[in-house]
Amino acid sequence: MGVTALIGFIVVMFNKALTEIVTTSCSHGSSCPMWGTIQTQTNIGLGIIVFMLFVGIYLIFFGNQQRSVEKNKSDYKNLMKKMRVDEKMVFKPLIDAEGAIFQAELTDKTGFSKVKVSRILNRLEGRGIVERRRHGMSNMVIVKNGSQNK
Image (cartoon, rainbow, N blue to C red; front, side, top):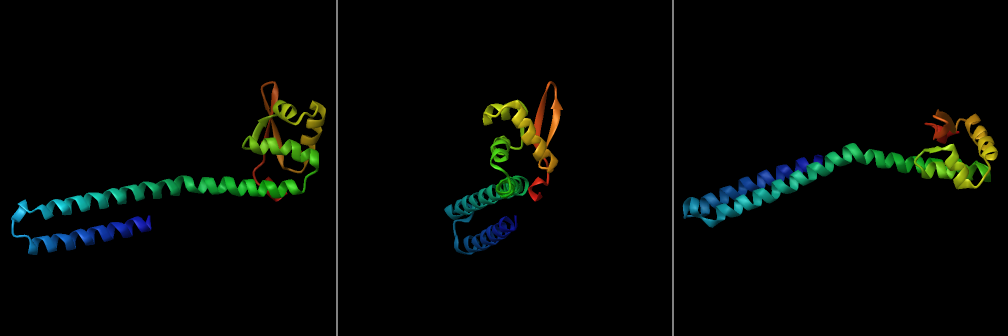
């Protein structure tokens, strides 16, 4: 946003200087073709400013989310280093599903029995890494916030 303001200032100053030059050097009056050049330069400058303003607004509102997702993935990788092999096999599909998945899907994706997945989830739940929420006739498994510190 600061860069956009700086470029806006430069465009205004350039336009002012160009107007002074055309005013003093053009003898044709308002029909001088240099006045059209000033208008073109101003429009291009304003277009660049508007574009940069939209990019700045996008980065302010959405750029932080992307960094947060990447940070979480890094934290989850560190967390997985402390897990047993079977826990990793259950946790990875959960992360790939962006932190929430049905327990039945975990059974399908891991190839483990329902009992084994349930026992692994009990261990992960006990360590505060995941939680299960009842969702109709099945369970939704969700990565708990702050679990990367466990």
